[in-house]
Image (cartoon, rainbow, N blue to C red; front, side, top):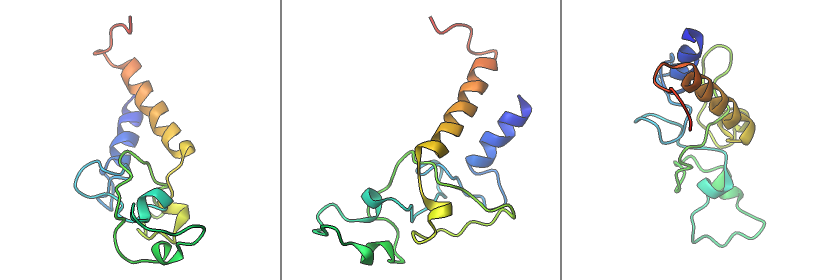
Length: 116
């Protein structure tokens, strides 16, 4: 269980970058999530275009609250850039690992006695 706590803490900001990889958690999280809904203003008329938003150096106009990005490279570096989809894209397979990790912590904790 200690290892799971360490992993959860790492994801939430206890890491060399002091960055939460869960968007919206804490005060320091990725600002350029590789996500169309987060990176294009709500009133934009893009059609199938929109590359000016993909390549913009500005933070996303919409926060993808609760999205879990790909995370750091093995050397604990993270480049917060929309063009860096490997690290900044949010996806269900990223979120699924966090859900599994946190579920394991809840079911092994002394706090959760019963789910009925």
